[in-house]
Each structure stands twice: as structure tokens, then as C-alpha cells.
Length: 470
Image 1 (cartoon, rainbow, N blue to C red):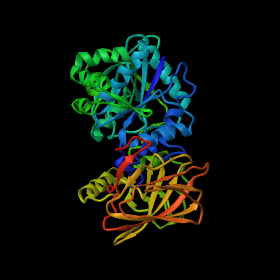
Image 2: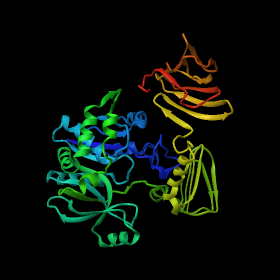
Image 3: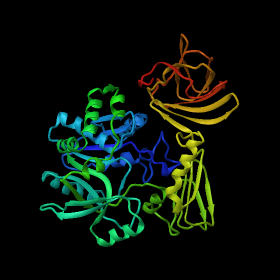
Image 4: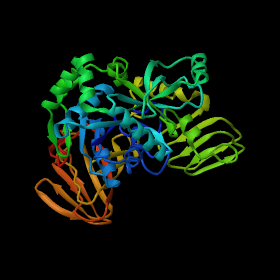
């Protein structure tokens, strides 16, 4: 059986301020109304013999990923949590080890969660050609037919054509080139962009890993053997996985094996590595602009303008990137799109939080967002999903006032348990055990006013938690 494996561990720093550590680009609706993860899973529909997706992801994103899969009606084969990022080779090894337990002949289609593919039928056709090469004993990568001399991608040179398939043997892999080399590659006609998508027999991949990087394989075997179940997730053993060397599939296996093949793929592919990529693939107006949200333009050309929370008006400019969120605005020349990561580096160095969180922070029970804050107070808007509950908790440094504006809340306060309806409120004294639940069938929305000497999110002592958090 063909098993899709989705890798969802990236951070997308070049897409700040929309992409952040707790809500990275693969979980955002960038090119459509669905997240890139959802689009990656949905484009598998129609592939013959396709099993349920196995997702390898960052522990911090587990509840969001589970919720996004539920929204599109997909039940995953498994959600495997990496305690620390170790690049693609260990992630693929864990997936392959798990898949062969139930299917010794398993074939894995490995896909990053954050790529755009606009020609889905051509993608399906490329996978079909790749399966022919896998049947001939090859480990397959997909090479994108280049339309420009890009310096941000690695390249794959095609070698000898293989009988019965569009695949070719790989002549060589080339690191990201300078512009002159990239122009030569495109002119030569036998070079492809390295897409980072793969197709191979799980058993053959593990055999090659044993031959070339037995240290990675041993660490992954240990991490999986000592993993444990946590709700619907599989937590890889932290110590074992942390001890695993970090390496890519290209370096660990594909550049070393004698069985590498590449399928040329003209599939409308883009890795959406920067805001300029969204301008390139977006639907441009007569002036060459790509806009989203509440945007008004006058005398603007060849720009991307995106508004997330308010009106953005732009006058008399060209070749700009303008991205607005509730707490940050990016304005950059389109040619400097790759440098957005420098903003994130600055925010980290300054110990600010805008690279990590949005004002709206998602939790397994719903979300909260900051509305106002000042000395010794903070105001939040909170939404709790039907049937969901926050942890039973206590705070050392703050008291809380809760005002219900929609729905009904079940409140635990010390030994009391009572309901609070719309337009009613309650008070949680400092140091009191408390819990907020939504017993209804509609979302619960409320305003929380915190007051105290310290209002940080780490002032939480949990006693019970439905979601297994510490």
C-alpha cells in the first residue's frame, strides 16, 4: 500500500509576521481558504491505493494539526511528536519503522506540509511514474522542471533514462548555486529543482539508512521503541530522539545510494519560502498587485498587500510587500523578501514575543487573545469550544474576573461548581483552584480581566488537565 507521510516541522520565519513559532506557515491559509497542511492532505484524494496520512510534527503544534485534520474529515494513521527537530532523515526513519510494522511492503510518499502544488492531476501522474521506478528498486525524488534560474533551490542533474517510466537515474545533486551556475543549469535542460518530496519502499529506505547512517537508524529505533501514547498522539522518547544526529534525507541517503532516481515534475510547485513567492503565485490585478483582506490601493503597482485585522491603505508605491497583523506590520521591498528572517532574529535577540505568538493564541480547548494591558492588569477575550474545558488550575500572583458574553460557562471555584450565563460574571480570587468549562453545544465567549503583581502565562499550576499538559 502507498502510505502518505506528511512532515510538519517547519517554522516559516521568512513569512513573518503571519507565520510564527506557535502558528507556522503550514498551519496558515496562505494561498487559499484552507491551511497548507490541509491542502497537502486533500490533494492526495484520487491517488490509487492510498492509505491514511501519517504526520510527523512538532509537539507544540499537535492540537492544531489534529483539529485541522478533523475539519477536513481526515482521520490520520498516526500523529508522531518530535520532542526536538532533527531534520528530515530521522522523521522519515520513524515513519518507515512504524509503517512496516503493519505492512512489510509499505511504500512511503513523503511530502512537506508547506508546499503549493497547483496542478494536482500532474502531481498524481508524477507519483504514478515514481511508483514504476520504485518497482524497479529505486528510491525516488521529484525534480521540479525549472522556469527560472533560482538560486534558492538545490538542483538535481538527470542521468540515464529508465525503461518503462519517465524517471531517470540521478547523475548528481547540486547545492544552491550562484546565479551564473543556475543560469547554466537551466540552459543545459537536464537539471531540475530539488523539491524535497520522496517516494520509496520503507524497507529499502531503512536498509540504505543502515548502510550509510546506522547511527540515525539506531537512535530512531530506540526513540520509537520507548515512545508512549498520549491521547491520540505518539510521543517519541525525548532522550533517544535528542541523541539522534540531525541530517536530511538527501545527505543521509539520496546522495550516497546507488539507487537514486528522479521524476521530472511540472506540477505548478512552489515552496512558498517568502512573501515574494505568494506574490508570484497569487492572482494579480491589472496593476500587478496581489491583495487580501480590507485593503485600499491608489497608484500602487506590482505589490503584495495583506490585511489581517484592519484597513490598510497604500498610496503611490511599487514592488512592495505590506503585511499587517493585529500586533505587527511588515513593509519591505519585494526584492528583500528573503531578509524578513532578520526581523525574527532581531525579535529573538531582543527577547520579544512577536516572533513566537500572535495576539490570538490557540489552545486545545479554543483560543484567547489579548485586548488591553497595563500596569497590574490585563484584558483577554476567551473562546471555549463546545464540550471543552480548561485545566483545573491556580495562580499565585493574579486574580481574575470573568464576564460571559455568549453561551454558558460551568465554573469550578474552590469547592463550588456553578453556571454563569450571558451578561453574568464571577470572580476568581488569587490562589483559588478554578476551572472553566463549556457544557453547551455553542461556543462559549467571555472577557477575562486579570489583576495582580505578575500576569505571565507561566503563572499556572495545573492540578488536572483533559489534554495531558504538564
